[in-house]
Length: 435
Image 1: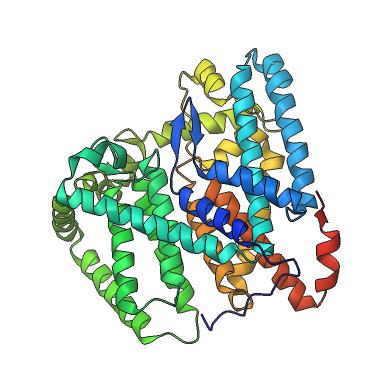
Image 2: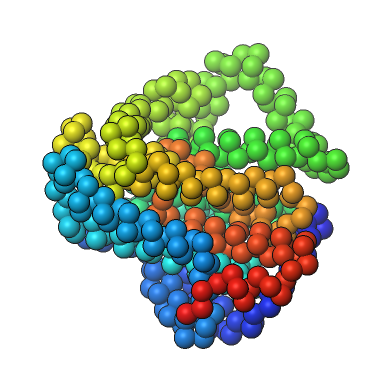
């Protein structure tokens, strides 16, 4: 990790053991989610609530002024749209329970963001990233063993439809994105020996393929291309990286010379090892059908989302209204399956644009000035890139891990900017709203 600067030390009190314990439990249970009474529930929520209350009492839960003001305006805006604008403009009365549930989801992700920021100030961000990734690896390993040895009594818990690995998540697509985010940590982490790192990465790659997620496969390919491009722009390329690059180039050349034969043999072999791989071969053989076929129907849901944005670009359609309004207008209750279209349609163009512009500017700055940042900053940056890429085909706006890692990332970027401009004493006392 010598390529990164040392992480600036926060000026806040070091956390006690209870804070570290709860933070680790949150990180571990971010790998678990189930639908309970129509609500996506994770045990991490319990520890998140307890830790938030504890930090508030210790005056260590730090609210950033601009995000807090943005959130308050957003919740008022979306509630007004849901309860008044949509009934008047679309002649559609949403269920009050749906509006409340979606509003609570928005509140939860804001808490996760603020908690990630606060824990980073307390120097607990590295354990969070570490144990989140270790838990993902352990779940992927267990899932791989269940698939390899055909252990049936846990099949329903770990597999969707009997063949697609989903781990402890409620959706195999979601699971695959989580595994790729853990893959980031183990490729960026320099503490492991090469053999151990290769074994861990192989388990994670197997679990991603075993999920049968086309979204996951495409996200993985995009991230690997990003890493390759980043490596090519480095002045110093390690020998192992150079060998890997040559191997990839040779494989690509072979694929280009005889794509049908190579693809057929490769997919046949992988399908014999991983039954769920049958779904993935369309990514290579028929990309259009991969998007619209085999139950995906992304083209239809995206079209509906675009139409809703065009019908209400300023106010959006609010919270808790999407499925019902889409059903009334277009005959489908499916959500957008795209975080960008989902939020542009629900929040309106301006609020969503502010959020995504802020996120991409921060990430872009970290990409251009990589060596100014600590290892944990680069890892969380890459995790955000993975989730934002996967969000092109999944609505991950309520993904807890995205928001806690975004909070950690914002905290690290902010402190490194402070260190580079020598104004460390001025920003913490005035940059937060004390609770």
